[in-house]
Amino acid sequence: MASDVPIHGDQPVVASASGQLVHKELSTVAFERTRMPMVLTDARQPNYPMVIANQAFLDLTGYAADELLGHNCRMLQGEGTSPAAIAEIRHAVAGERDVDVELLNYRKDGTPFWNQLHLSPIFDDDGQIAYYFGSQIDVTAYRKVQALEASEHRLLMEVDHRAKNVLAIVDSIVRLSNTDNAAAYASAVQQRVHSLAQAHALLSSEAWQAVDIRKIVEAQISRYVGSNISLTGPVVLVSPKMVQPLSLIIHELAVNALTHGSLSRPGEGRLLITWASGTGSEDDRLHFSWDERGGKPAARNAGGFGTVILGALIEKQLSGSITRNWRDDGVTIDLDVLRK
Image (cartoon, rainbow, N blue to C red; front, top):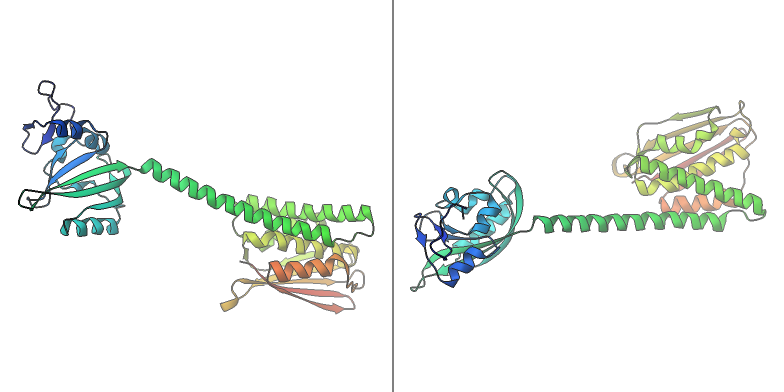
């Protein structure tokens, strides 16, 4: 109710459609003074116009009494109001029954707010519907809290999932790295964890979104700049959960090439890295080729981390396969793995 509506004696009043002052007993006092926004619509008139509105309702909507009274409550609706919520209200009114619904309404200045609306019919002595009583609760802040809690829950679940993935990889590194020499073991583990850290930094820089395979490869072979390395392939995005295991695989291939293969003799050997995404029903896959030429003769090492952990990563985490084609001057390693 507008602030300029007069008070008769000590009796509070409510605004009526006729502009007259309607004195009530305790029910009137309660209606006016309650902090809950309330409105009364006339069910005997076309379009159910508002005939009484309390001050809390005026404060909530930003309208003055003379701007509301005589109009239908749908004036509070806007482009964001759910058609389903409107249909639910219309159906309840047609059936002359109570309804509780949450919908997006708009204040006079256009500010949206979430309204927990309750409508209840009021019948006269003859059992005919005379009015509809409506109460509103602004649940905008509650909605924001719900959205924040849901967002925080999703974030915690994602962090938990990522942490478990990384720890699973680290566990594999620790268990399967060669332990014949303590110093060599410590160095190998440290390098592999560093590889994961590089992958994590890349994911962070990409806001934990899908990452182009070229960036993944470059992050793992950046220390070998100056070597005869060629990268060829289109933009192929790899999902965040695949980035770390794939990074570790590339790290292992690079270390093996540096120790036994084409990168062991700078200037003599060549490394050709190519990739492409699958097509059609295999659009979620990545075809990756690691082709070493020259340098030392290819070492067909059947043991150690290279074969054991690569197989575990490729088969279990990337649902893929690995094939090796040995030649006198090198080796071609083809990977077919999930990228999504």
